[in-house]
Image 1 (cartoon, each protein chain N blue to C red):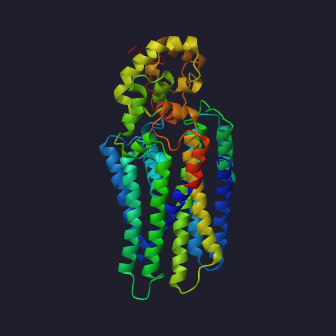
Image 2 (tube, each protein chain N blue to C red; image 1 turned 45 degrees about the vertical axis):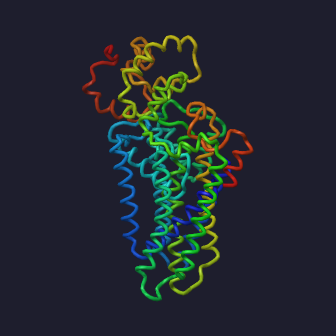
Image 3 (cartoon, rainbow over the protein chains, first blue to last red; image 1 turned 180 degrees about the vertical axis):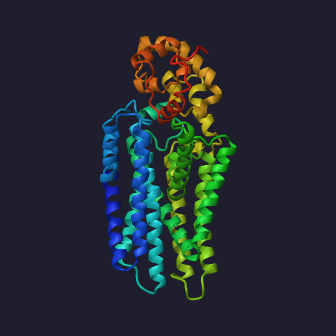
Length: 189
Length: 273
């Protein structure tokens, strides 16, 4: 679950880029610019968080982390760190699991949610103009909703399976500890 | 949970799009109003500071940012993990999600009330059917989700505990292990200011034992998170020696406050409390 999420984030980014191309070709330059601004805002906020997370450490670590953000592979790298049990560096403000969840939330608020609203608005405006909505646009809305759902579920899942967090705070969990029931909770619902 | 999040996102985005098409300022005003209400409630409950250990103006900005980010994420995705008191809190989470669903329906109502004759993109009947199907599915999936949960977890949706109380309970609850009690050290000091003397006493009493036992959680990260005035004097002196005269600290806020107070600082070893 942790590893699939970054792949879907990239798929979502790809669908956003295809929508930028589609909007531009259809003359909806405003929508294309808005979508690009969301992607830019997301990267900017992620860079700010990387600064907050690494500013007390060596500069080369900060530079490396910022390059990871700019390459668009931050979710993948963070997921890898969480899955491999990488421990928190003494210079970092929060542990890798919290960093991953924060970056996912930033992606949701800057890109996934406003992107979905924008695509809905554009589709309704197309309908208002008396034209049919293209299959690419409908597909992109569905992909955006599912990837956002998956990404959101991953935020919960990562906390839910963390044995230290469960031990420290046994009240605030989602699923039963048994693996099968946990799978039902996350995948079916 | 995937379906739960996706369904609410579709419903909220559909409602938001309808409202934006009617008048985008309605949408901005609604989002701003609801977020302000949430921040006001947090402030009134003395629960504004986010738990991340960053102080000063940066900490204030980060708290504001994280409060808004988490609130909006829950608005659109209903992530259940954010019902913890350190985020929205159980009762506010429920209120927030049902407000989000209601907002989608109100948006559709507003859209058709303000739309000019013949200007509708879709018929009113289709819009209500879509919203009803999405909202009804969300409720059905959420009920299934609750049924799959352990009973003791369900009660947390009705919790009125504040973030500060929750964080402090890590330390104050009788019978909590040292590892759990030590969690408080990694939290923002504003969150547990009121129990600071107890934490200082606890550290002073137990530190020699931990040095002997070397528990897993007594890491360099933990030590660097402990404020100088909380550390036993001999440990602080040792840390100063390692750091070449002043301790290495891990948080951004500490770094910033040490920059601010560099000229006025008189002690590298804090005076004994």
